[in-house]
Amino acid sequence: MLNLVTLEHFRPLLAQPSVLYLPDGSALQIQVQGLRPAPEASLPGSAREGFSVSLNSLGPTDFVDGLCRLPLPDVCLEHVFVSREPAMGRDGERGYFCIVFN
Image (cartoon, rainbow, N blue to C red):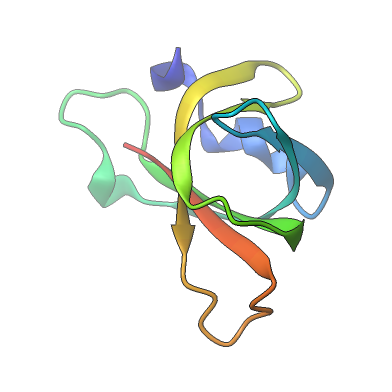
């Protein structure tokens, strides 16, 4: 299933509030901040181009990384790995995350 997801599945969520369901089942309010094509990260023979999705929490969170559920307009992604990035000059109360698809 995850191999069929493209960057276009995330485009409707750009700059819109959404929900990320964490490994413990709790809901984290997030916003998709950016989409970045990454053709160099594509797997050999894959029809899909690699890409990454940048997310940030809309409030404080201790979540670091794990397999999450993320509802998209056309599909609900299950068991997608979300990893935290350092705040690096951004609001340290929020969480900043990345999902990489290759």
